[in-house]
Length: 102
Image 1 (cartoon, one colour):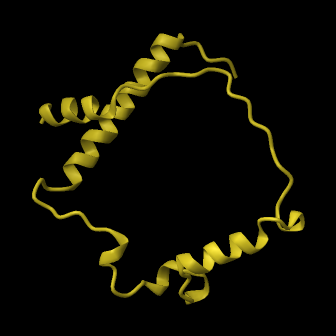
Image 2 (spheres, rainbow, N blue to C red; image 1 turned 90 degrees about the horizontal axis):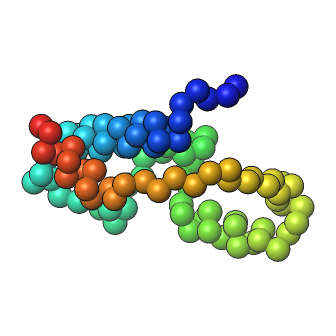
Image 3 (cartoon, one colour; image 1 turned 135 degrees about the vertical axis):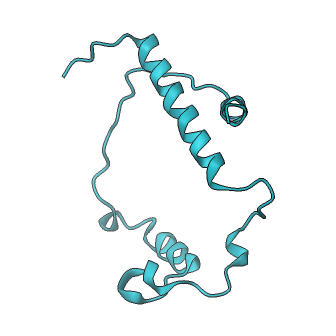
């Protein structure tokens, strides 16, 4: 299906969606909230792993390394060609603009 919008209109729409996303994300967190990393997790939630079993990042890393040279472990590669490149605005500017719109 052909798009009836121009590249400039598509870029403007993407910028609008980006600004909306940044604004909604900014509303989700207070300015004084601490940053949490994986290091803060004391116990993993088994509800977020396959079959209720704990899957550690190191286990995944070990499996990827073990299968890296095994062609049978990988699917056939696919090729994707980019038709057009669009430069997105600086995220810092978009967030600042979205925050000041409150």
